[in-house]
Image (cartoon, rainbow, N blue to C red; front, side):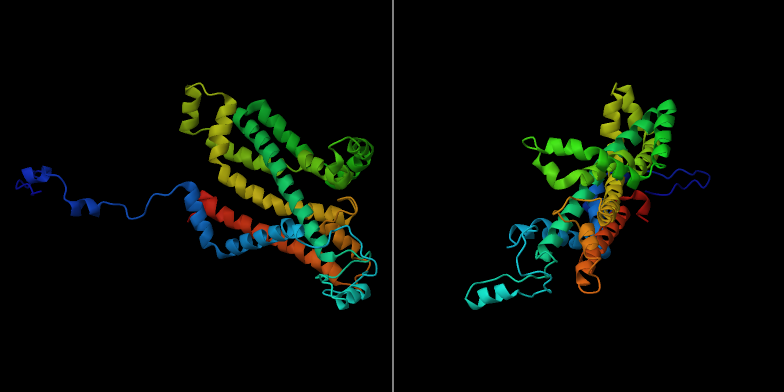
Length: 350
């Protein structure tokens, strides 16, 4: 391209060479060096760069293997009582087990000792971790489903629907959850005992009325924070052009909420759900410590800590082990949730 010799003209003078196809070198100079990645690939790549989050994820995986897989191969069960093996120290054997070993039999050691009833403490800690993790995961799913549904409906329709649902959330925050769990435990004990006698409902007796009451309270009271978060996201997204286009094409309100609005805030939902898991685990452990958790002999980390209180001076490790595991689980999920938020929240990219 040549300059125009006329000093009063701002238009460059064109030549036939300016219309020739670009060379390979010129094309390569315009190539964007960074490849285009999707939202999920970008989030996973940023999550992998967060060393604390990756260590927390590794710890969570190890704890899940410890709680869900190892008990299948462990030689003891959480409810079996071994006579003469009461209150053994970690890696110790009873007199009868020593005799069996001297006779040439193989006896698996009690890695974490035994409790006052002669039950292997390691398998009880594994099963307690399993119960606490199941409660946390199930409660998080319940809160996610109910909270996202109510929050999206309130934000999408607005008006009196939004006012009614948000005032309901305000009322729910005033209800004492522990009192409601106690009342439900007494009210549901007789009906659940009758239901447990029917074929296929034996699991109700294992869980107990207290744990079922905890799930009911999670469904009734704990979705308020999720609903408010989803509502704030939907209020912004519903004014987008693609929502207007979907309405113009005749899409129903349910399809718009499901396919367009909730799908576009899925990253925030995952982060919030992950952060909800440790909160639910802590609530269950606290209630089990007060005696409002799983039914005996099914253990949870909170009930194990509660049972070990009386022997704190003599057998302190029976309390420290479940307490440390509760702290480790809650800390790992919190750090993992923070890492997911930093990776998938668009506001955190910079």
